[in-house]
Length: 446
Image (cartoon, rainbow, N blue to C red):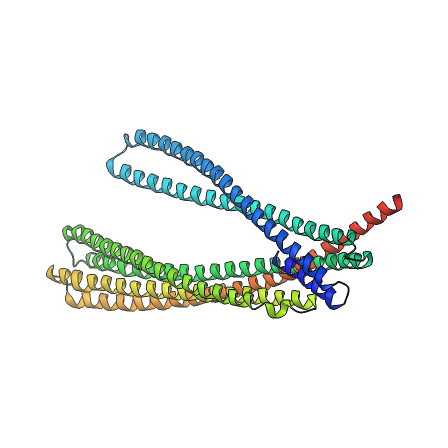
């Protein structure tokens, strides 16, 4: 809309410079355009606000209905669960209730996200419809004023025809610019999604590595006790007691890891959100400054240069925004990766302390040969090192595969961008051809 309005202003000024239009007529017509554009924008904003109120009420009603239906479903499931739990023992019943509550929570979250996306779609469609109507109204304002000026004798018929032809051609150029910007926006959005998928894979690799290391260290404690029993150094009466205690110690360390990880993730999340908001705000301010500086090219007589400058400006902005987002995503991913790594190392050390400082001492008290214990402990130390090296090697291999997939995806997206622009050009050429054929048929008919 902004481009269309500024193009009209430039066309009128160029007519004055080419002596096709008297300055005071251009001033009057420009004043009419400005007033009518302001009126149009005010009406557009009022209509949009009315649409927002109506759509919000409609979406709220739909949300209430959907959520009530979900609650009824949950009540029915809970009643069925109560009947089932009467027939089972206490422990499975508690676990079943916990899983059912979690399922209901996930279903509610999914429904809320679904309804939110649906609401955004409603608002986007409404905004698009109003924008299309607004653009049609802008064209109508232009053609009406040109017609009025021609009838008043302020514009010669030949000049009016030439002006309309130029305006129509420029609208085609603007459409091509919009096609490029839309395709470019989709391209950069998909690139960002592809990069985030790549980062998610890396984080998942770190998560799986952390779980594998912690489980390996925990398993060594149980293996230590079982080896002593199999070797005949531990009485069977002590075995169950030690295994139960080991399970309790391991669960305690794992629960602490989960709690600490959750707490630290929340702190990191808040830190990253604050940082992202600040960086994005800075980028938006830079964009405002760039757009406010467009007067330097708005005064150009060449409208093609003006459109080209817009294309460069908005393309550069899309690239800068993508680079900033990718940089912030990558920094956040690295901080999360370091957080998981540090907490994993700390947890593995705690499990080693449980093994060496608690159970080795306990086994010595039960008359298990110290030398045999130390041999097993040394084996465990070597095993954990080998396990760590294996997991790191596996992580590097999978990270390399993820990077290769990212590069292939980006190449595919580049081809899709080229194909999209090519198809859009063909479509516009076909539309123009059809329009010309219809126009010629209409003239021949008369």
